[in-house]
Length: 80
Image (cartoon, rainbow, N blue to C red):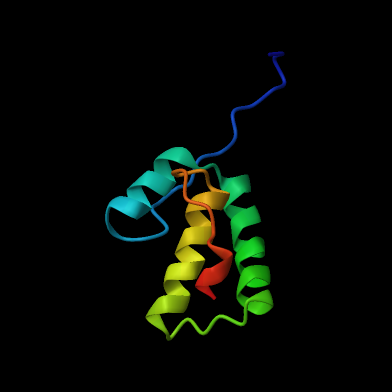
């Protein structure tokens, strides 16, 4: 690591309430979170998710966990 290398800026606050928000804040940097925010728009549009529906919010959450490598969850293509 050279002197000009910087550690990525961590999130300044939890993006969600509760344990999930704390986990994301502790394991995700600002750049990765920005990438997720762009990716989630794509996921919502491509899968035609209706976030007022609990099942669609769950699909998006599965994608979030997989994208951020929070666990071994992989989006289930049959879930939509």
